[in-house]
Length: 493
Image (cartoon, rainbow, N blue to C red):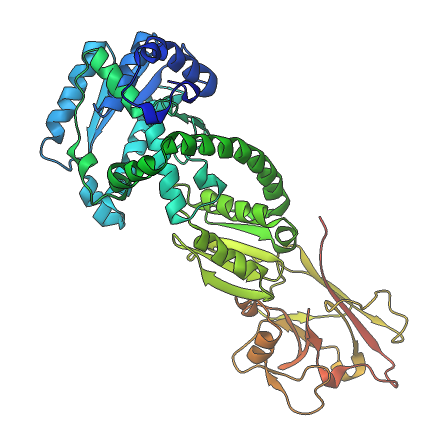
């Protein structure tokens, strides 16, 4: 059973020794590698095919408490009869059996998925519901070493990093279906020929699914055509590819640990439909961890998304690493990436994102000096008069601070939101004015911040756009005697 003792190029030869030790090795893998408690009930995905049949039989023989769960995909006329046969086999083993029938084809069409993807999601969803209902700590599926080779090769051909080339894990927790119930694969070290030998040795009669021979499926073409051809050119190819995946899986554990630390450094905020990354922190990480963070972000928001290729990750990475301070782009699976200065948002298109910048109240506010006015998200506006331009209590090295000529501004000031047709004469523009909307675009103010950005006004005339510019007519001059000092700040707590 263990790969170190079995060469895939010798399938069909000398298996008596392996079969004698098969159950003991399976038991060791289940309890040590998959970390399944020998006294707790295990839900086994049971199709009735050779792999799941051998797994159920062998686990029953080593006294592991079991539940067999079978999902009828309703894709073939004989599927209902096969479900009944699976129930009879489980009953013959003395194993509780649960079955459910779903119309996979209809679900696939309704959700815009391939039949294979819809079947997979529905099958795992069913298995984990059964496990949750009966308090099972793990769900076991019967993927073999051959399945691992096929999976790794598929990922290689489609383009994948360490996460894809490591293949399937023997134990996965958390997983896309549960944070508490593990997904385990006890047969990942067992070759398919060993499974067939085991079934023959014990007189087991597996159900043969004709879809496994359907060459329209990519995996089947790999199994029937490509892998045998490569094996004939390079004997031992399957074993070596399996070993490479095993090595990468160990390396991936180290990368995962580093990526977890990077994730904590970069994650600024998390909601049900969005997450925010600190862009400066993200850009400080090595390229490998940047890619790992993006994959983690996708897994957080779309846990069932599979086959994320190099191009998907690179598209988001290129946007984040670009010099743009505000930008957005469609990503995948209904998500988009939004850049807002030091924030990277990854979110549903329909998500309402929190605003961390200052926003003016809906109604205009008439201001009396001195003042301290609380705004949203911990922002506050402060204003006071100082006697001379150089004797203010605040430094003005920030665009969120300003000094104005109070005699020109007057004391009837208003804080309001932008309005259609607003124009602004920014400091340095001696004649004429700009559309405020154009000014916002030129200054790259995030689009969704513009509608409620606070404006300090004298009547209808804009005096100060906090965070950006004073109005030219109200600048301090050498003869200014009264100075209005303003500060818009966010509390540090």
